[in-house]
Image (tube, rainbow, N blue to C red; front, side, top):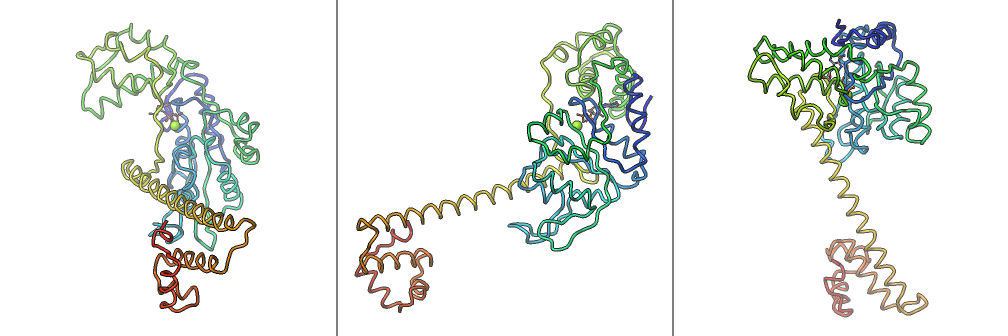
Length: 368
Ligand SMILES: Nc1ncnc2c1ncn2[C@@H]1O[C@H](COP(=O)(O)OP(=O)(O)O)[C@@H](O)[C@H]1O
Ligand SMILES: [Mg+2]
């Protein structure tokens, strides 16, 4: 049995299916909870495809993969020039999902400040692109997913309560595969068919012993792991009847690491998304570097002031020292340009040159 890609015959999956059918036609927010690989994204897509929004996009983003600093512009977009290197207007996921569904995967990893902004946007159906001075309208449905216990996250102040209440009106709990083993044979058949179709081969099947092992195994990586084991086993098997030798090293292995996905939206290839993502991460790094430069500059100036104040004990300095310091400061400010420095000091360039000689102000004082 399969509905919009959601395969399974277990009573657990049947129950999930009936909740999907119930909530799909409305705009109500849905929170999907389940272990990694259990099929949360499959459920989100099934809801979207059974809703009246099905002719628009479902945009899927992974909240854990977006650096905090660019979250807002990723979600709401930005206007040209709103920050360094924002050389063009950029659509955010909100705009891309307009009329459709926004799937927020790993929602527990959304920064708190972003939760506030997102909640406001959902409630007012309006948002402001970064650097814009007018609001944009939006019409999206939110589906969120997490493998964490959001109630705990709220209790530990890592997740906003008001946002949680907004999301939790419908919660779909997706049981791990080991708790619904009835689904395993059908899923295996599905993944075999899928592999054969894309590789233009056919006739593969597993021995009874292998099927037994599959039914006994506890699938810590859930359906994702099952799919990967099936595909690898077919690829490695020399015969179309796949026996247990092939499983050595595939199963009973330590739990495979769950690869984190980059934000993926339909309409762009994952390579394009990956490139965009890296580019934007680089912009972030550049911004951080500029900020560090600014902080260093600030520290340097503070040190300079401290030196000035420590001279002559009680903070009193001579007119000559004050003049000398004023000149050094002006030269620093002008980046060593003496005409500019003279202007800042309200003296002629000639006077400045003379005083530089007189006070023995050498270049390293203003470039230091
Ligand atoms: N019930 C299901 N029917 C068909 N394929 C499934 C099912 N559950 C999971 N999958 C497949 O398993 C993989 C992981 O599913 P996904 O929805 O990404 O899991 P999650 O988001 O919970 O980590 C995907 O390849 C998906 O197509
Ligand atoms: Mg997922």
